[in-house]
Amino acid sequence: MRRMGQADFRGRVVRTVRKPGRSAERRTGRGATGRARVLGALALGVTALAATVLAAPGAVAAPAASPDATGRSGTARGAAWSGAGSGSEGGHGAGWDLKDTGTDARFRGLAAVSRTTAWAAGSRGTVLRTADGGRSWRDVSPPGAAGLEFRDVEAFDGRRAVVLAIGEGEASRVYRTTDGGATWTEAFRNPDPKAFYDCMTFFDRRHGLAVSDPVDGKYRMLSTADGGRSWKVLPNQGMPAAQDKEAAFAASGQCLVSTGPRDAWLATGGAARARVLHSADRGLTWTVADAPIPAGDPARGVFGLAFRDRAHGLAVGGDYRPGQPSPTASAVTRDGGRTWRPSARPAPAYRSGVAWLPHSRTTALAVGPTGTDLTTDAGRTWRTVDDGSYDTVDCARDFGCWAAGEKGRVARLEPR
Image (cartoon, rainbow, N blue to C red; front, side, top):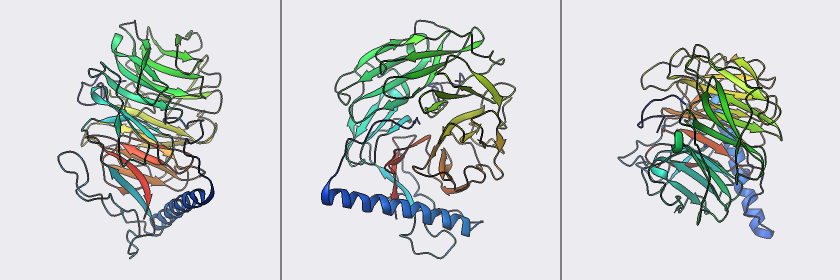
C-alpha cells in the first residue's frame, strides 16, 4: 500500500472473499418462511432498482441524508434506491440502512457472514461484531491493539475470524479468534522492517494468503494452512518483478481476493501501470496483466477486486485524492484476469470497494467516499445510486450485503 500518512491509507489510509461457511442462523418452520420472504423482498427490490436505473438513464437515485458530525445519517434510515426519475412513490427498490455502531472509527475491513452477522475492523485497533442485523454491536477489539490499524477481516462465521493490521515492520500483525472476539491470539507479527502487509484472503476455512508490498523487488506472500493459526512466507521464485514504486492499496481489504480452492488475484497501483496479478496455485506462481485504470502516480491504481467465478472479475480504483478526476475507475475481465478492458460507462469517481450481489451473474455494487454505484450488466456500465461515503462492501449468500467506511458508518442493504 502507498505510504500516504495516517489520515488516509497508511494508517494508511472489507471481500473480502465470499466466506465458505454456512450461516449460523439456520431457521425452520415459520421462521424459515419469514426469512425467505425478507430475502425475496430484497431480491425483488434489487431487481426493481436495476430496472429503475435502466429506465432512467439520466437519473441519480434519491441521495442519502447528509451525515452529521458522527457520520451517521440525519434521518432514521438511509436513502432508498427506488423510483428515481420514474415517478415512483418508493417501496419498490433497495437502499443502505445505516446502523448505529457507537464509534467514529473508520472501517476499511468488513466481513459479511449473513444478514444478521457481520464483522467490521478499522482504525485505533477497533473490531466490532453484530449478531442481530446491526441493531447492536459488540466491541470485540483485541486487547492492547489501540495503536494498530486494522484493514482487513476474514470471518468464517459468527465466532471465528482473522484480522490484519497494516504498517511497516512489527505494525503488520494477524490476530485470530474462535469465540466471537472474547479472546484473541496473535498469530503473526512481521519481523522484517522492509515488509508492509496490506490484505488477506481465504480460499476455505484452512487455506489463506496475506500480501506485503514488494520486498527486494517482489511482492511477498504469507500463507496459512490451518485457518490462520500459523503463517509462513512463500518462496518468491514464481512472483513477477514489481514495477518501480508499485504497491498494493490497503483501502478496503480487497487488494487480494480469491475464489474457489486455488485462484487468487492481487491489485496494484502507484507505478507507471496499474496491474492485476493472478495465481492458480494458492500463491506459488503468478502471471500479470495490465489494467486500464490510470496509474502513474502514488495515489492512482486498482484499489479493489471482486470475482464471481474464476473467469469473471471486476476492478475498481482511480485517484483517491479528493477532487482529483478518475475518468476510468472500473474495468472488467472475462478470462480470469488474463486481459482487462475498461467499462463502457465506468464508475464516475474513485471507488475502493466492489462486490457481486449473491446469486447474480450481472449485478454488483461499487463504493467509495463519494457514493455507491450499481452495475446490472457485469461491469460494462455503472450508475450512481447513493451519495453516502463508504470504503468497502461485502455480501453473504443470503443477500446480507453490508458497507462500511468513515466515522463509524456501517449499513446493510434493505428492501424498500
